[in-house]
Amino acid sequence: MLIDPNMLIAYSAKAGSTAADGDGTNSPFTTALSRHLTTPGLDVRRAFGFVRDDVLKTTVYVASDDRADLVRAWDVIAEAFGDARPPSTLLGVAMLGYAGQLVELEAVALRRG
Image 1 (tube, rainbow, N blue to C red):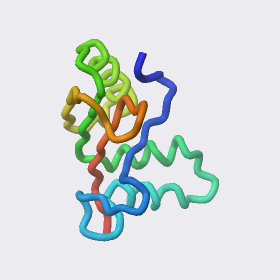
Image 2: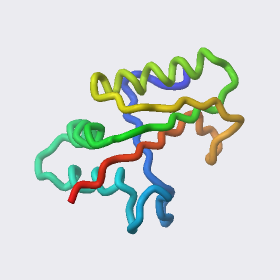
Image 3: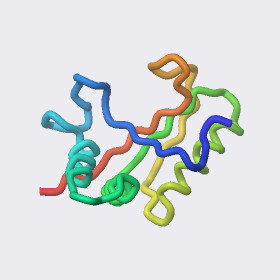
């Protein structure tokens, strides 16, 4: 199995790089994450829930040519977003950037004033 339903998945940009979907130092996803993670006493799972609510679209990359692996990854992402699931694209790819990496989630979030 590629993904465990209890696994927390978050992706922004590689350390030291600028995400292509933002016009500043941080992407809208990272901006939303940093805004919520700095709330005193807020459980990190709730912070990611608030970030989830700001997500406008996702792209899910799965390093597999087996449709069942793609469906499992899709189901986990869909469950994580619940009723707040944004429009999404699911892609099977030959490989991802890091050794052993099986799934990558790109999330584009709303930048609030």
